Length: 235
Ligand code: NI
Image (cartoon, rainbow, N blue to C red; front, side):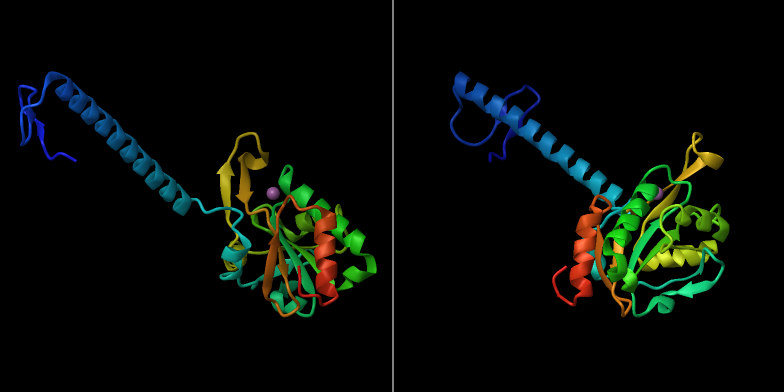
């Protein structure tokens, strides 16, 4: 690229023989194109930077299995919907299907719990070793009583877990679950919650295995669990 520039009179300032008029015009066009290109690159850079910032401040609510497997610790100490204290150790020896949400959720949580309920029905007696857990990320409203009423509407095998704000925050952090209160005048109490919608599979030793997408069908999840329950490695 030429290191030359244009002086105050609009003359091309560069070494070499003087340019003819057409050459000067094409050089001028080239410079315009170059400026536009730099503008595009700059804008792309600003855009990418902004995206990066957005990404960092607003984590992906549904990270990939690989991202999750390396960092998830399935630890929690909470209260069940019957008021008993329960921790991850309480459920050792069982496969856990863990879903985070809140009882005032208008659609995502009811749909997720309905899917989990269908999975349990499809597994039937095979599902005895599977324990579905619904962990509240809205402890302000989700008392054990509210959780009892909500989970029992879906399946008798689902256990609802809630607790103090700090205990819920710790559980969500360990599972790398994202949640955030969002002010919304049209929601009950003037707010709703955003949250991770994946369903987490935890093995009988308490280790994270994989997430099921919120959009996975009950057949897919039941088939995957059957393979796991039969001790076949593939999920
Ligand atoms: Ni929800």
